[in-house]
Image 1 (cartoon, rainbow, N blue to C red):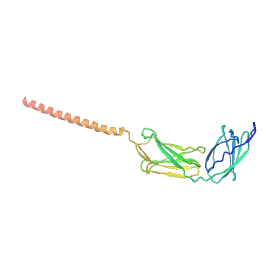
Image 2 (spheres, one colour):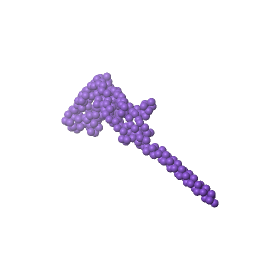
Image 3 (cartoon, rainbow, N blue to C red):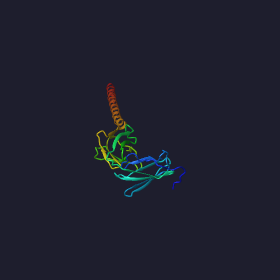
Amino acid sequence: MDIYTNKPKFAMNPFTDPVYEGQLISTTLRDIDGDIVPYGRVHFRTDDGKYRTVYADEEGSVDFRVPAQENEIYNITITGHNLIPSYFSFETKADDTKPKLLEITTSPRNPLITKNIYLNIEAYDNNSGIESVFLLLSNDNFENYSFYELSNSFEQNENLFSFNLGRLKAGEFSYSIVIRDYANNTYSYNNDNFKFTIAKPIIDYIFPISIILVVGVVGISIIVVYKGLQKYSEIVRKISEKI
């Protein structure tokens, strides 16, 4: 029960912008004078009987996601401290727009076998929002591949998804990306440029060269010693003949 400590006012309508099916709504409850309504309540009811109440925080902020169903009419009652119960409604619009891929980066920029590798994917969906991003990674032209998935929680609306691929062996890796929004619109991104290379460590080149050098030095030393022994034997032979 709300106890009025001031002259009660009506709430301001927080749902003036279009609302899409599956969308995460983030808004602030205010009265008609623009003052924040802390700990206000938003009661949703649909024509087919679905009902839910969400609660604002101390700053009047409230976040909630509507189900992925187009043309759903929501009847809304907003109540709170020093508020006259206020009634609004909205109808969800269809989201038939496919999500977009904005940018891909790797961390570190030049991948190494000695460090965990992150593939950072920035995606965007202006209507219902990104639900999940899927990643397929292969180093043999997708004859074999690893599968990764990152998702927003029901009350998240993040656009940047960072996949920890761990430490990978040296070689060239290709990847494919699938993005899905909360209205189940899905789009696959495949491109010949979707690849990165992990260079072999320098020791892999130094070790064989070192072996070749060592073998070469040893070989030369053997030849020098052999030639020296031949020369010494010849000197001994000549001395023996004179004796």
